[in-house]
Image (cartoon, rainbow, N blue to C red; front, side, top):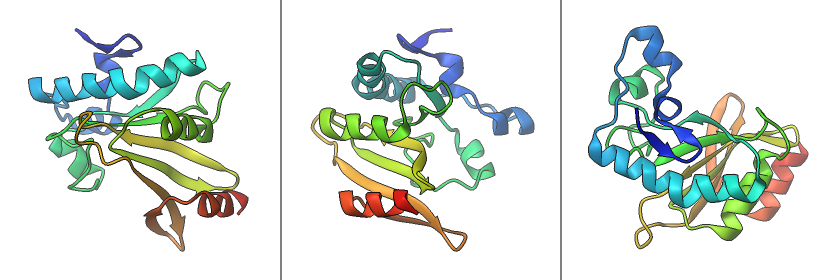
Length: 167
């Protein structure tokens, strides 16, 4: 099968334990593959090349059925209409942190949405980033954290991220 980019295989981009568990087909169509390749080429690969280390892809494409099973947002850019979001986790292979990835993307790359996810105990659990295209990206930056069992998204400020990382 084809590659999404130099460092992301098709199987890695469509891998889903939920799809496997429920026998769900998690296959992108041609427009979705095009979006996935744009994201990989414009965000993932420059990040990977900058750090010179492998970065774990924890989630990329999600079919509508997979998204429903995981109770994902209907507006998720991972979802079948887009294929335009990726979750990366530097902790799996080491050599950098998720905050390092977040800061690199924030300061150096064009993106639609960048979310530092599940911030707690001095670290971020993963980084979510999406890419639409060069002239339509919003460059929106958010922080996701859990408070009293509830997931909260808020607009990024350096002070707020520092505060959450300190807790």
